[in-house]
Amino acid sequence: MSLSTTSFPSFGLLPVELQLQIWKEALAPVTVLYLEVRRLPDGKHNYAAKLPKLAVTVYGAKPHNVGQSCKTARTLMKQTFGSPLRLKGSASARWVNLDRTVIHIGDPVDAATILDALEPGDLPRIRHVVLPWRSDNVAHMITACRMVSTRCKHLSSMTFNPYFNLPVPARKCRCHAMDEQITSFYAAIPDYSDLPWWDYSMDLMQTRSRLLPYFDNPRPRMHMVPFHLVRANL
Image (tube, rainbow, N blue to C red):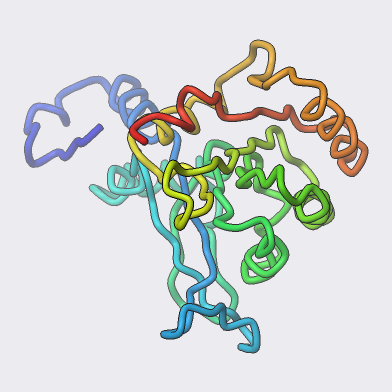
């Protein structure tokens, strides 16, 4: 939602309670943050750096733009979002409501590196995490979940986006790229209250049962991105 008092000059004539309700609804949409370790020119990850550089991409709604439109909106954003999300050693900050933000970790191997690049005080505030699902390397998935569980103590949901085999063998496999469908799926997670989305094949159910014990009670709801979305637009 885009809203400014200059484009809607009569906004200030509305009752204060109605103005605040409009601002609250404008700040409510879910943000999807895609975090990945920046690669060196040769394509390798720069793990040797003391503070790894992260690429942070915002998908979907950007309610922070609304929150910066006027003094009232900014005050309400600070009250609703709390402190902004910060990277260690960086002066920049991102205004996101971590109760309603989905954090997508680009590669499960990088889970610890990415989370450790965030300010420690922000980690307990993270509620929703997405990991690419590598069925060809369950050990990496278990390690990644352990890394997440020890850092993000109050998760509400954990979602897996499965890798899939591409029709061209030379391209091997990859996770579905972020697009409108995938973004919309992620954005629905914070408000979703029905049974978790999951592929109920025996191997995936067994893997899921191995992952859950790493999380404290109440354990996060675990979702799998539906395969009809994973294979869309191939």
